[in-house]
Image (cartoon, rainbow, N blue to C red; front, top):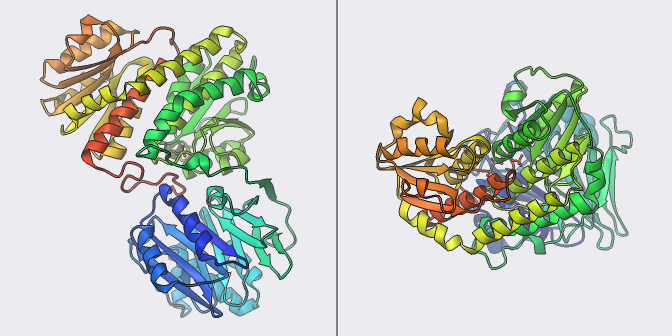
Length: 603
Ligand code: AGP
């Protein structure tokens, strides 16, 4: 979703701002802009569409400025227009904003009645106008920020520069914000994502909600000051060194990040097993031995929700504990029935998904223990949860989540085995190694999946079906395909087809049926039902199973042996490849599909 990068220091701010925004492009956006301090004035350049449009404008004007802020906008309030793009600025301030000001409508009416004018339709400009109004009253930027911030509701982060100085200011509420500095080069940075600051700011600081950050550069030093809203000094921030490296984030020889990330999975599975079973992660899991809360409430969105459905199976079948899985945007508003001796488990790649964060907050308010399965160390979810189980997937750039799903589900499996007290069983490590070998085999034979894709990519719709442990995989396969190939795809429990969706079946509809060795006969009869209606059958099933192979138009045979718990993760890799190849044949923007954002930081 929107991205923010700000800089102040002796260098030209344009370089780090544009590089930072380029790194955040994967998150999704529809316009971009920059405000630079030039000859004592705040000058704004904005463009609709790709960041390349802004880059071209900057190339033409070639500005050099010591202080600036940049933004990639994903429209929420107001259409995708240059006026609505950020930064928003006037004679005194320029502001970039991520998130939503929920009471913007009311505040805007009041400000218009007082005679203030607006140039855009955005909620963000309301903050700019409030700042300006309060600065007029107080002649203090810090007081203006406090007063404006106290008036607005909703989750937001703001970064501000001013005409009066070269300082950088930032503040947030339940939205990501990171400040950084480089003491040697005397540079201060601010961003919505530490990824933008790799190689620039060796020290990074995560402010808590309502902490004002102020980056100040003098002739001898760079300082980051933190203030509470009453302007007393604040210690409510976490500092750490920025350990991420850019190498891990290049595409290498792969055509797309998504393809690279699919291929990374086998090695990451091995690494995660070593971490949680044999190395540092083991002590984190050992704390779960014998753990038996009254119940689990898993909440997450999209792919992470599907991983939650897989984990539910582990908790219920291995641990025989109650586990509810809900979509975060539903859970947060349903006044959930949840008791203090239960656990809230939140799953998220980014750790910044607004709805998931709201569920964590809600559980924390109810004094329920909050656990996370999360990829991004230092993210809001990571910081706010009582216990974190990192999935160690590295940065995931492809908007369509692949490796995060596999590692989220696997982390949940390790948690379940830790509760059971069987982490030391050598069979566990062997089982995970087998999974990684099988994923490697699928990757090595990916060309055969391309052939399947070539035969079906022009079809009108796709129904993914699966039973039991494969039911969440049917959901995930369908989501992946619709996200990147822009075709209609739905996931169904195989037994549900005849309760409605079978009406859709004709020769233009493909049924991708996952048929595991469990409940095989039952699923075979579902396949027969589709066949009888001239639907195109693609079956992912056990190798050498003539009883289903003869029913399938296209058969993808896999070795399910030795993977009683982890086969769903293996099958899912096949569906990732199918989605990838279908999207490629359709010529879509695979890594940055239209209308999507990598991290959904608004509800
Ligand atoms: C998956 O391919 C998605 N793009 C999306 O559904 C994603 O999984 C969801 O938005 C949750 O994100 P999170 O894991 O960062 O919380």
